[in-house]
Image (tube, rainbow, N blue to C red; front, side, top):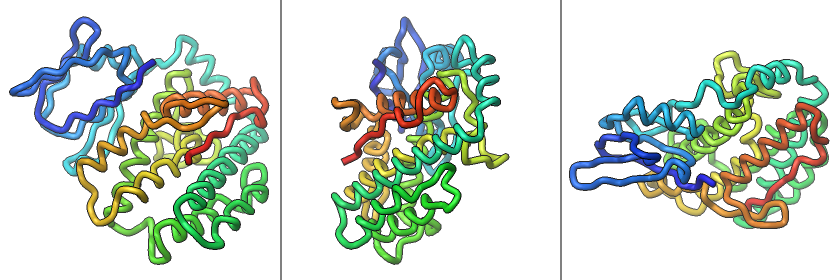
Amino acid sequence: MAFRSVVIENPCKCTYKGGYMVIRKEDDTIKVHLDELASVVLQTNQAFVSAYLLSELAKKKISFVVSDEKKNPVGQYLPLYGAHNASKKIGEQLEWSEPSKKRVWQHVVQDKITNQADLLAARAEGEWVERLYSLVPEVRSGDPTNREGAAARLYFQALFGKGFSRDEDTPLNAALNYGYSILLSSVNREIVARGYLTQIGICHRNEYNLYNLSCDLMEPFRPLVDRLVFDNVDDDFNKEIKRLLVDQLNLVIPYRGGSYRVSSVISLYVQDCLNALAKKLSVDQIESFDIV
């Protein structure tokens, strides 16, 4: 199974040869077999990437993320056809029923709030932990009362301090946004690999958002990023923190009675949600996961 996440930070030439991604720098050459590769994050504007390599990455459904001049992810290269029956899957996606979408969204929000509460219980103190747990059963189908938003307001203040705001330009927010982008790229990959469109969401429906469905299904994984940022970021968002956030996909967490890499949990969780939306699986059978 693919498990490597490659971050390219310096000027180089990236090509394909004999099943390997070949990265040539002035004083070094690195080879990574594509079967081991889950994602590539390009953090330099001074890199040559061959069309042959891009073609092979697409065939293997390997996520390729590009960054801007500030080294923040701004784009992602994905295959046009993630599955042999993509047309059928897209047709099914357009027929997903409103009750199914609302029930899956309810489950996703409950998982997200539970994970937020678990993180608070492990990293912070105060009455907010029990308040968050109490919100979980209040989440109704479709979350019409926006328990997700209520939980977020409590959660971020409790975790990062009463003065914290997600709208501020701070190292904490820069790190959170970077980590969320890495998560989003992984969820994008899983959705496309199964033949579905990332644009058509179950709750997120912004006409300018190409990743509405991915934004929906990534929600329970956000506390993983929050945990890393809480533990490692203070006044500086540096190269080492970025590497740590990229490598979050290789962290091992409890799932289905065993231990799985985050990338594998994302794959299985997304599959469960898509099967529930297609009525191939009961919503109650979507497997939740622990982050602490």
